[in-house]
Every structure is written in C-alpha cells, then in structure tokens.
Image (cartoon, rainbow, N blue to C red; front, top):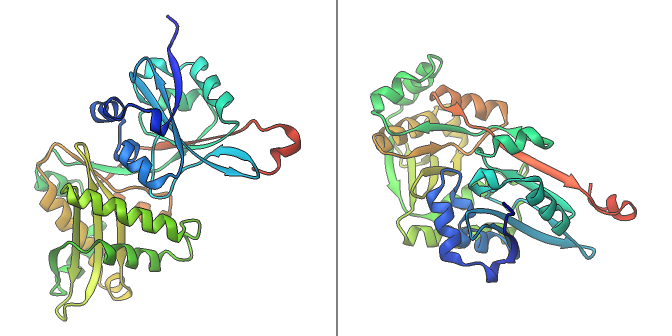
Length: 304
C-alpha cells in the first residue's frame, strides 16, 4: 500500500492531530510538541505520513542560501513518532530530497531505523518511577553510599522553588565554556518556553541549601504525561565539595516515586555525568544521531 507522505511548513500543520500523535506514542517526547518546536525553532517543517499516523519534525536554518536541518538547543530527541512500519525507504528518500543536509537527533524508539542507516548512538539514562522509593533505592550502586552519607551530615535542606530565571542564569554561567553554541537568543526563547510550561503546572524546581541558606544545588524539571525531564541542573563549588547533588537527586526520586512516569536524566556521554546517573541505578535508553550530506560537490564543503 502506497504511503501518503506530506512535508508541511509549521503553519500548515494541524496542531491538534500532530500533538495527538505525540501524546499517544511512547516515542512522543516533550520536544516534539508544536509549542516546543515553535518556541525553539525559527523555522521548521513536519513530515506527515497517512494523516498523522507517523510524524517527523525537521527544524531548519539557512546559510549562504543553503537550507539545512539541525538540532535546536534544549531539544534532545526528535525523530520518527508513531507507526514505525511507515519508516520506509520511500520516506527517507522524501526527507533527503527535501533537505540535502541533515543533522538529527532520533529518538530512542527508532532502533530499526538506526540499524539500517549510519547513525551514532548517544547515552540517555532513565529510571522508571512506577515503583516504591525503597525499590528504586535498592538499585542504587554501592559506590553511592559514601556521597549520600557525606551529604547527610551537612545540615542540608531540600526545598521547593519557582524561580525559572535563577535556574537558567546559574546553568548558563556554569556552562559558558562548554555550551558556546547555545546563544543568548536560545536561552531567552527557552526561558519563555519554561514560563509557559510553568503556567501549565509542568515545571518542578527543587534546590538544596545549607545551614547559611546558601544555594548548593538546583534542578529544574520539565514534565509531560510520560516523563520528568532533568533539563537544568547546577551545583556550586561548595556543593560539589559536599556532595549536595547526590542529596538533591536522592530527594527528587523519593518525592516522585510511585508514579506511572519516567525520570529522564537527559544524558550523558560525559564520563563523570554518566557515572553519576548510573550510581542511582539509572539504565541507558540510547537515542541516535543521524547525519547526512547530499549537497552538490561544489558546495558540499560549506557544511561538513
């Protein structure tokens, strides 16, 4: 049966049908909703197969007149969402004919696609929260005991917060050297997006303070109907010395346990961060990076 494949601009997309596809599929993560894409991309298109049975977002930019696909800031995974039987060679050809240079982060469920095409596997650690905190705690690595013990002796307090700007400012300052590709515009757009999510009661901010009421660690989580997303986390120098981040995440998991949700750590391929997540018993649910360059040879070098 021939597939009905359409590639639509963002303003041509039926938002209710698109978002319903994201809602109803496990591969439909928060980054793929129209409101998220509209906030973080100046321009994007959507591949729509068989009346929104399967969708595929394409964020685009332009350089020297060449349109190319890219991964927006604060957008970990997009890719195919919906019926995976519709991910055919015909669909891939349609995407590559439409956009000659692609750099996509493909979501965790697109494993069959990943096996067929040249992709890079990326780490993403998760914990299923549909169990008691004691059960989750039993899966902690033994190596976490020292850090939790040290943190427990500091007189820390685990408190709620609602200040999005503080969470972003601290994150931006801490990552100013290793996230230079994230622009001021990106941060401003993301702050507006987080404010919208907060108005929908889909933001959680928790922090750790010491006896002097000084901030040690802070985490901002986004929330949808499937996951809590650990999108912003910062620890002060004093917090790193006293293991405050262990105290923070231990309390987060205790607070959020017994829900039919996933705690998504949002990474990481960095060895130190990877080990930190693994100590909490998190399991790797890899996603994939798909890159191709089909530009004509005379201009292919412009986008390497």
